[in-house]
Image (cartoon, rainbow, N blue to C red):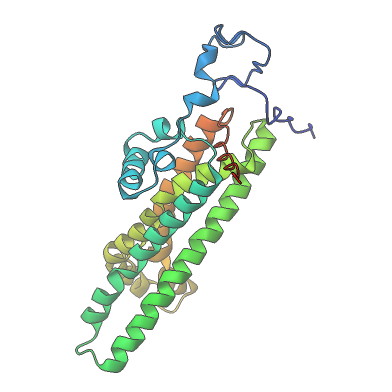
Length: 255
């Protein structure tokens, strides 16, 4: 079995197109390997996503927009910002968890002829439980994905350390809501079709498989959006000189 390719040093300046080590070369020159101008591989070429530059509602919406209309452009701009990357991941996961609970009251109203006080309390508990269960599941899946990105990158000889992998996952996680939307859409479209198939497979093992099929298929299809964005992020950042946000210098104490 061939030995895995060693990734470049974490502090080396790399050509962001081919990964050639540029340390010691004139920044006004081009990469000797692929010809990319060296000034296009410096850390300042990655100013950060709109969220990383100025966290807020407007920048979140702009980041969400770019993630869907210009994902490569967005991933080519991200940097390592541990604090804002974690915040963005949490915001994206909570948004997706909110998408889970929105249809539940409408489903409950359609299935119940009247809503009593006890039913309202039960519905509130269901909403709260579904929200936090969905959030916990997506955080777990994001964590697993981050470990997979680091492992895959090391095996390919790419330089995607844990902080940069976290940044990629955090930005892609903004799209997690597609998994739940896909699940609900698949349920509304696929349940009648699956019901017809289940009648044909009545009394067999396949009938049990058909019951959860719309939910699983819809979730997986929506999850592929997240996986595709992670893939693009890794491709655009595999030799990134993403750097880190400089720490705020301490304020000198004046006696």
